[in-house]
Image (cartoon, rainbow, N blue to C red; front, top):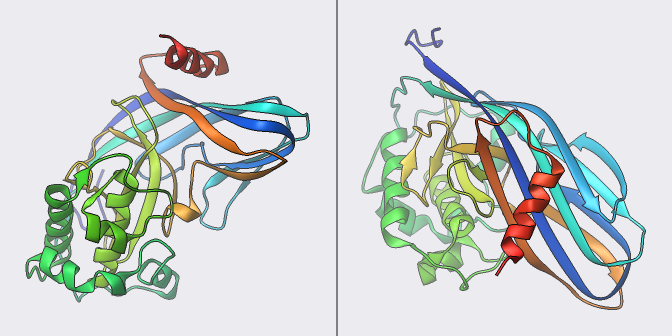
Length: 302
């Protein structure tokens, strides 16, 4: 197999299954719960999704559709009164590890069309104008695309400490630059804003680390003028060579456009997330909703 540039592609494919579960608790009866779920694998050059099953307890009316960026969405509306909601999702994906020659190009040499402009401009959590000076410093004078991406990713990896409890889903890239602390979502937002400040289109990615059970993960993709969208992960200091370590659920301008779970409920009380986890299974013939619920039971075990 060859690229448009004439270079060879070495491809390794691995079939996997995954399970995701989350539990929400409420302080009073919920009479309606409406949730948008992005827990299905996206089809791209790195993965081919199989069927995805989403179940809620209590059950609700469910519809499926692609959002404006092509991410698969399940929307579930529950009208059975409840004080607890469990969301479980399972699916299968064939992951592809492609070793593709990635030629570097001048940083100012990208010709990007109008559809790409939204990934160059400010979004609600990643404004390039707020981090422009820091982006120039982090790029260390690189004048090529891959050089600039590599320098920015490594700067964030070295300087932004992975630490829970200091940020929220509303923390901006500029906030992260001040505190130099956060989780994968925060590191991804800072990377997005810095790359955009350097004139590099960049978008947010939500998904899973296939070999690290736990919560969902966030990384970014940047646009190469010849090879399209390529991945980079500032949390792990990795650019392009992802192997089969990542499983993608969706892309957006930032987290606010592609959370795994979002929605609203009607109640006189409050609600909060009690527990969430996910796991990717290698060498399994299938994974069921019961497997997802078992992750919840394991989390509850003393």
